[in-house]
Length: 315
Ligand SMILES: [Zn+2]
Image (cartoon, rainbow, N blue to C red; front, side):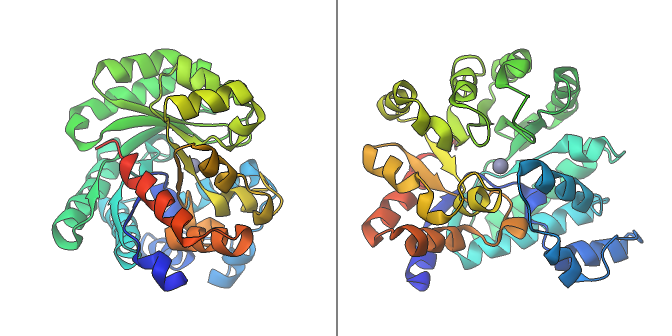
């Protein structure tokens, strides 16, 4: 089954580039940049990847991202992810990057952007993987800083296709970012946002009505609100679901409880994605495989999920 799932052509629409930083590359970059790490080796770091919730993961994630310093580092990070995509027949990617994770610690915006973009362009030329990059704002920081980030990004307007919203969800509702999303949309950018992962269905309503997003990242808690479910079915608003992330961060206790296939059968446009594969135990194919093993996903369902991902592309 793994090989069959691996060979299915698919798109990945919910992937944080910083979350694809594998421990081996993390250690290599730390050495290249002469950065001391709190872990002795790759094994010790992997052992730290036992999270109880989103915040515990984020604390480690920001720590890990600190090894990314130069344009070459961002290139290497992105390129390593694209090689994985090639190996798993992911033919199109719409990854997120979090500029604030880097500008906050003094890395210039253009260093981040140039490194990532150069790798994505090479991925298109050398690996045949098309792309659309999404700039994600960190929701635990004030909207004012999101505005500054958008301003820094505008000289590179052609390098990305949209804006997103990620990081700690609880206590940081989408409505806090209504103005910066309006500004981004006025620049012709697509809008997406993380909503309904740990946060309640109300956050999904806000993301749709106030941020006017065209795709929901996660969104699994929509199933708690029947009126919301009906809307996302009627309007065929895609959900970028990340099964391994959801179980690793205890949104669902185990894969057998995941609601993605129920949603699929009800007509929701759900897709399968890896979120932060270096931290959550696998890339897209491993996520499909987990649905097969934990939920009994059939080949027919896998085909529909893969087709949904191709249909839900923004570019
Ligand atoms: Zn995410």
